[in-house]
Amino acid sequence: MTKNETNIIEIFSSIQGEGPYIGYRQLFIRFALCNLNCAYCDTAFSPEEYCKIEVCPGSGSFKQVKNPVTVEQLIHEIDRLNYFHHHSLSLTGGEPLLNSEFINNFLSEIQEIKANNNLKIYLETNGTLSEELIKVIKNIDIISMDFKLESSYGKTAPWDKHREFINIAQKNNKEIFAKVVVTSKIKPEEVSQIISLISGLGKKIPVILQPVFSKDKALIPEPVKVMEIQEALLKKLTDVRVIPQVHKYLSLL
Image (cartoon, rainbow, N blue to C red; front, side, top):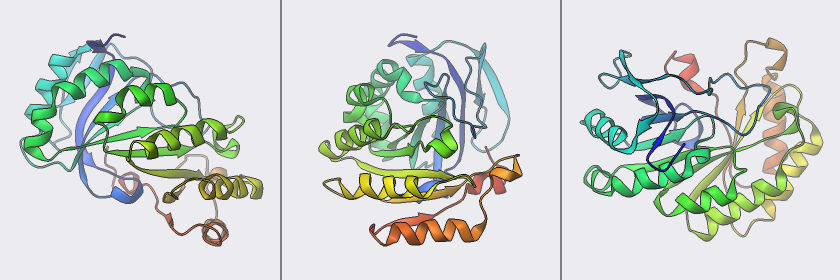
């Protein structure tokens, strides 16, 4: 991929179904590729021959455009779909920061669209690619960052990378919150590590506990367990919320 073109899986309008901005209308750009392979992931992120683009916001009707998509094509489609108010433009994936040069070029070119529509830029990321974040940070408004726990991620948790990522966001005065996908396998020591990391920040950030939505029923945590985890975190942290994936319950994209 280059700064002028990249592989995009889909572009569509829906509500944000996760975290503190739940229910806000967003335009989503889903990028291909991811640098991780989480055990619970239910999102397709392999490169596709065609990019699916919603014909009309919220219609669920799509056209296809051959990949890779250029910056100019993407600007055209965003301008076309944003004819009524969206709160923000969500860069999601996969891991969108694998496309940092393209994203930086694209965001630099839509400053007028962003300003005229009061459109915020919302980055959904796994919080492991700090150097790529630096390339785009000036054009990002809100960062939704996942904590990758070993119990859900399936590998050693990248705590140092998460800490560095958050520090970069805070040094640049960006709004950031951490999302924790909670499975039935979560361990007490992982809860302690979350407390340690957040407590050690210059400025504490909100923590969102998101019970996993999975076809594997054994992974879904009991409600009482989720409440116990929240209680444990609230002994040291001030802003801990339990928010499920609402778009899944509403059968929305």
